[in-house]
Length: 103
Image (cartoon, rainbow, N blue to C red; front, side):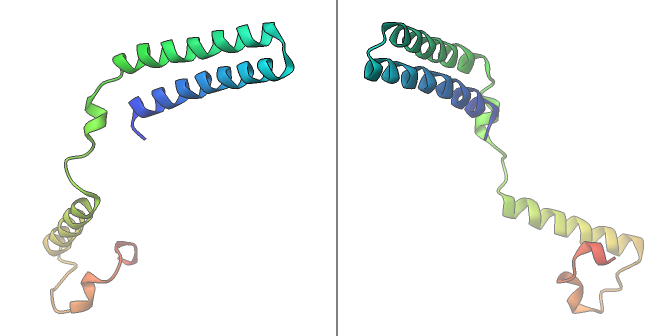
C-alpha cells in the first residue's frame, strides 16, 4: 500500500469505529453512546480528508517499471558482472538457470 492509502485506510477505520459505537448506542437506546459514536466518526472523516491532502501524490504513481522488467534488468546486470569479473566463460548454457546464491 502506498503511504496515502495507509493514511486514508487508518482514518476510515476510526470513522468506522465511531459508526459502530453509534449503532450500539441505537440498539441499547443510550444517547451518550450515540453522541460519542457520531463525534468519533466525524473526527475520523475530517482527519481522513485533511491528512489525505498532505500526503504526496508521487507515491500513488508507483514504479515506472513492472516487476518483470526490474527482475530482467537485474539478471542482465548480474550476467554482465559475471563476465567482467571472469567467473563466467560463457560455455555453460545452464548458467542462466542457476541462482546467484550458488556462486
